[in-house]
Image (cartoon, rainbow over all chains, first blue to last red; front, top):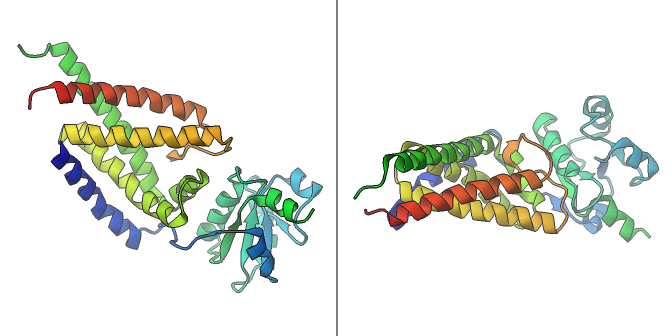
Length: 132
Length: 142
C-alpha cells in the first residue's frame, strides 16, 4: 500500500507543478493580507468596502468606496475612475470571519486586472478597534 | 472461500461513486486554483505560502486518487489517500464551525449551499464509505 500511496502522491505532483507555472488562474505567491497599521501607513491607498450597502452607509473607513458583489456592475465604474496602477487597494468586509473582501479582491485581480490588491485583516471590526 | 458476489459488486460501485466525487471535486478546484486558494485562506489555518501550495497540489491529488479509485487502479493506495484527505477536510470544517467562521466550504469550487453544516454531513458519509472500503481492502488477501 505504501508504494501505491507514494506513486499517487508523485503522480499528482507533475500537473500541480505545471499549474504553478502555467495555469492562467494560478494564485499569486505574494501574501495579500495586511494589518490596519500597515494599511494606514499607505497614505495614497484606495479603500474599498465590500460589505452590504446598509453597513457601508452606517459607517465606513473615511474615503472608502463601496464595492460589493451584489452591486458589482453598478459600483465598479466609480472604483475604476478612482484607481490608478500606482495605488495600493485595500479591501475590507465586516470582520475576521467574513469572506466578501477576499471575493472582491479576487474579482478585482481577475476581472479588472488590478495588481496591488490587499485584504484588511480583521476587516471593519479591526479598523473600529484601532479608532475608538 | 471467496467473498459473495453482491458484496463485491457493492464495494466496487461504492468505490466508483466515491472516486467520482473526488474526481469532480478536484477538477472543479483545479479549474480555478486562485479561487480555491481564497477558499482555503478563509479557514485561517495556514500561511499564504502554504495556502498556495495546497491550492495547486490538493486538487490534483484528488483527481489522481479519485481516478485511480474509479478505474480500480492502486485501490489500496487511493482509498488510503482519499481517507486521509477526508479526515483533513472534516477537521478543517469542524475547526471553522467551532470558530464561528461564516465561510463557504470550497469543497466543489463555489457551487453548493453557503455554510459548512451540509458539507460536514456529506463528508462524514464519504468518510464512512471510505473506512468501509479501507477495512475491506486491508482484510482482503493480496
